[in-house]
Length: 387
Image (cartoon, rainbow, N blue to C red; front, side):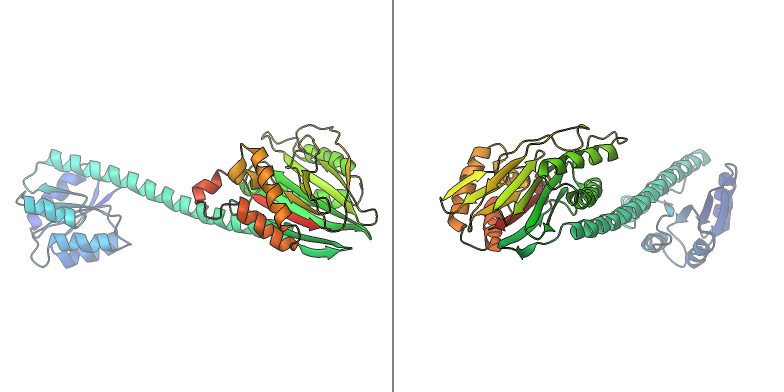
């Protein structure tokens, strides 16, 4: 039952209005002064207050202003009433945020109609505010989940700056959102071999972050069992496909996997749809891609992958990267991307891996892009390996 407070200095007026409202089964209370009204508002918490602006102790406008400025009562609907329906009355009622106003010389039908309309609007307003509160709570929870996912993902995408048997590795990762779909790792296989894995999961956000976490665990388990990159990707695909078998969404991942043998000075590699790494032959001053094609993992159950090899010499380097690097400026022009990449890498090939990564990103990544522009792009990951 809705509760209504009627405020008027005349007991006769409060009784007439109360009797009219009770015929509609509203619960009514009355007050004959402003201070008495404010006390009863705190006591009864009415849904609607009908206030005469001309009270003997304080103005109805002041009561309305007090109510609307109080967070605990601001949701209460206020109907101001005046003996004179003047322009000044309507203007002042609006200034104090009254929900509605009317002339005191009203009939019962008008009063009931206005009351029902205002109470109906209050119900809708209350529902809207409740939905907003629920949305705010969900957003806060989502922010917490995103931050937790980001921390987990960042722990799985290490900042790499290491040396191993004459190899030097340096990495950089730039997600377009708080959490992204790129992942990579560099890890020791045995006394003379290191593995480099770089991947990109379809999509962004929490779902992509969860998949990157799962793929990192799969990589660590399978790398110890399958030395050849083509075998590694074959079983990665098999495990990933099986894990996603009951998920209707089309999720997949592109991975480039390389094993660098420092004893034989060779790189063995296979690819499942990722951007091709760029190799710099420092001695002959040549730049070319480590070409290898393959189906992204998770799309089909049984897929075979190419096995490729490339010898290297001291001073050579490899730039591993995800598609996002080319997409920033050269999404529709891969030839131009490779042309500029060749020019840049030949200029900076003698620099440290960290300096090379910084030069590459300064040339190919738009740090000044707006958030909306970045959302149209992909995450960017690079690993520089210098021999």
